[in-house]
Image (cartoon, rainbow, N blue to C red; front, side, top):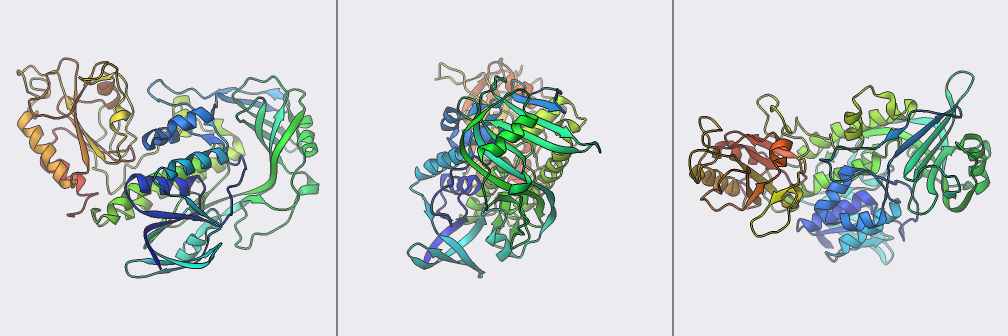
Length: 555
């Protein structure tokens, strides 16, 4: 019987992300999928800016940018008339925009990335049983070469809406289904609408309700879109899923070009001819949320944990963040370095996110993204998944009131540009420092007036730390993190370098101070997933160690 640290079930974007991150963190894993080959379907196509940030940290973003096309916005049409135009514009502090990429390309890039660690998807291997033991999970597999058993310390179910892992864990998956049935088609059209814009065209019936819809998302290639629309009567089915979860692609007769053309004839903003049908299917939509993301040594992520309408391209991206959140925690647990409650924090952090996404996408599916009466900047950042945060996490040091400016503990740690390193003739980004798979501690060194070697003296007020105190705090933090911590001093433009030999960068453009609301002498602890674990002013050893002890055990 084979022994492994983590078994990942399911090789879609979520499972591949989990496996790749586990390997990047130095954890052994196997990833299995019941399908004999990847599916060449453009299912999930929207890639959010936050996902591109994660791919940046993983070392995958260049390959993704080479393949993706920009998503510039959405053109709305209601009963044949133009509606409000939505431009997907983000502030300049966000390093990536919205993108479109077929799911099969995303899976290929992730699989190639995973192969860098000599780890490959075991195709045609289906999970048939799970039995949790005291310190392992015994997994039975049906493989191309016959039955096999694997003993894993942990199992991640990234195996979709009908997840066998979720069922074996006894988790509830409550929700409901939309009565409508839809169809998808990957086609080309000859209209001259602006490139990079999605199209949403709806028609209202006599009762004022939407009775016809066409949604088109641009794909790489000239005039190419993934289109979704209401299914015609001749393709409608009454099939009930065996487990009661009606979600995703269905079998049966696939839509033909003529079915898609008929919808374009009714709803296209201008006359258009569809051609080059690469793939089509019918599908149904449910909205469900698992009651727990963890049961003992079993975890669920992605569609195994939450399913909802595809509005706003939230599903795959939320699942990728699930996997990214879980992998670094499992890595510490496998090494015996995690605090007792570390793995419970996965549910504590991600379940509220899943709940919010399910509720929001259901609301937007019925009324449109513009239905929320929020500030446009807030809407854009939320759709980009830049507002995902964990303020109530057991791993996060509670703030004493919200900081005057900058991110609060639990929020995403923003990027900033214009950082200078002494031996580099080019400026670097803060994300360059956060790319490693460890926690990062940043000491902000203000423009002190107390002479060389002081940190923030004369500006930070009473108790501003000097070199000796910073050194003591950094060493205490390194010890509490078992050395799995990168430490930097971020120097304000006029600040002298500290005498204690910290790696340093200079905030030449002042972007770090502005983005973080950094006070002289303040320290910021950033987690491996790019969220702020705490900010400390002053950064005493006790405060830093206390925060790190939420994540790291005694070892």
